[in-house]
Image 1 (tube, protein in one colour):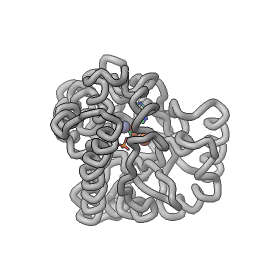
Image 2 (image 1 turned 90 degrees about the vertical axis):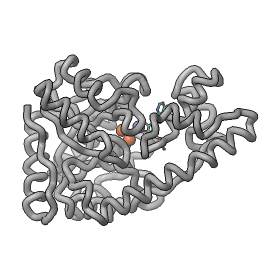
Image 3 (image 1 turned 60 degrees about the vertical axis):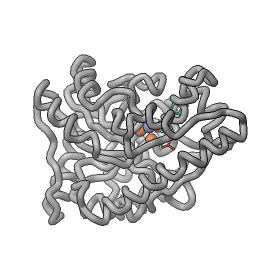
Image 4 (image 1 turned 90 degrees about the horizontal axis):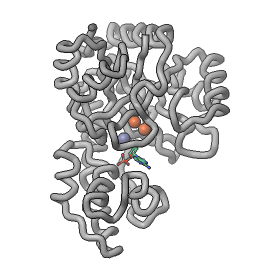
Length: 292
Ligand code: AMP
Ligand code: ZN
Ligand code: FE
Ligand code: FE
């Protein structure tokens, strides 16, 4: 069984449509794929149709932008009812933060004599609600100012770079609760991937587990072998589910090919058990896994 639990489509900042992504997963020999676009369930319906057509097991999820003690944390939410009003309201706030950030980024670029219009970004994003820096990066590529997304982040859009602009993120603790209430389960994405510090550490993860966190993504390209070893040991001590995944973005992110990291069948089964338990406790119609 090859199980990849973290991927992006054009519903956020991947470069494949949900249908293309599902077909690519089959071509890659995956048995289970989770679609986890940023802050939106927009791609779910198309992915579900294609998964039924081609016989791929599909987990519907999303990767939610959250904030915990002043730092950004990406939270993978699997199988929540995305229409649960308090969850939807938080996602709407994040998406509004994404929308309102774009013109500010374009102003900053204009200060650098780089002229990109809102329409250029829309063309790059295909009109997704989850507009992100990668779409602005794509517009910079089209304009010939940078070679690829990586160079766009390194020179302009990354933290500390001149066109970097902050945006709203949902409180992590509240989001874990809302995902549970919506009948889903939460996994912290690439917990140590974005800083050199090993944070959140064992104490923070233990607290989050008490609040309902189901697991941590250990095997991710942003974690080196040492980080993976330490995180895996913490997860085992805390009895958290361990996941591994590609964080595939189509051609939008180098070295994140489908299936480059995978989740064990045992951890996947536990994640689904926890989701089923949350769904049973919830009074929301949580989605189920689409079975092959
Ligand atoms: P945003 O959500 O708009 O703040 O943009 C963050 C997204 O940009 C994340 O999903 C990352 O996958 C992506 N990203 C960050 N750094 C890079 C990079 N160097 N190359 C390509 N994509 C990146
Ligand atoms: Zn992304
Ligand atoms: Fe992420
Ligand atoms: Fe991601």
